[in-house]
Amino acid sequence: NAGVMQNPRHLVRRRGQEARLRCSPMKGHSHVYWYRQLPEEGLKFMVYLQKENIIDESGMPKERFSAEFPKEGPSILRIQQVVRGDSAAYFCASVGQSSNTGELFFGEGSRLTVL
Amino acid sequence: QKEVEQNSGPLSVPEGAIASLNCTYSDRGSQSFFWYRQYSGKSPELIMSIYSNGDKEDGRFTAQLNKASQYVSLLIRDSQPSDSATYLCAGDSSYKLIFGSGTRLLVRP
Image 1 (cartoon, rainbow over the protein chains, first blue to last red):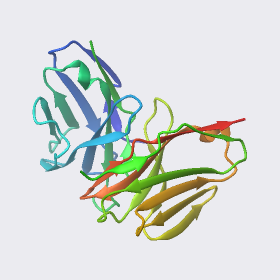
Image 2: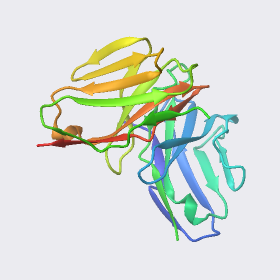
Image 3: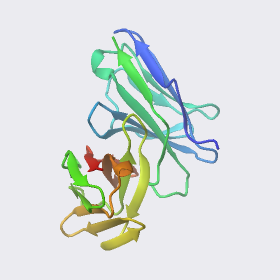
Image 4: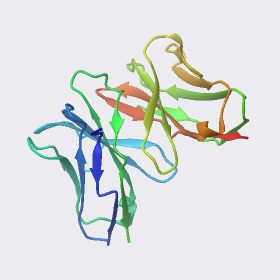
């Protein structure tokens, strides 16, 4: 059962390092969302991608954050020069092209800790 | 800024009671609404969707939508300790979901 796969599940970085989070959508799904969840808070939209195209990045911080979804391979969320405030759970969700926007299938998340 | 608002709780109910979770939203353009359940340390999972005014029932769950009042609710009948989780309300907005901060539900045995 190939659900949404995220890795790493846990990542520890020191301030100033780079974090790369990967997401492989469900088989047959061509659209990916990234959300961030701070402790005891809800999910905050970051970016919406389809293969080789960023559809909506209105939730992405203007600096240090980038995302891509190449033709081959997983979607990647990249955080450069991490700061303590980047510590959070980052969830990826996928949806099929013809599926309802709200029927998102979430991965288990990548939990980033910045020391 | 389009928002979805929820009371953070915790909402504590005894086993067997009805749990009522509420949500309001600001984007009048939102057409579809969803309830996701999230256990501690886990990922959200979809439990209910509702697209038109009125009630929608699925087993022990009933979702209610009132677009005029911009109000969404979720009722859980015969609450079980296994229902203890955070419930996230979400509305669609321009091809993405906007989530509330979630309501933590605690069902006491």
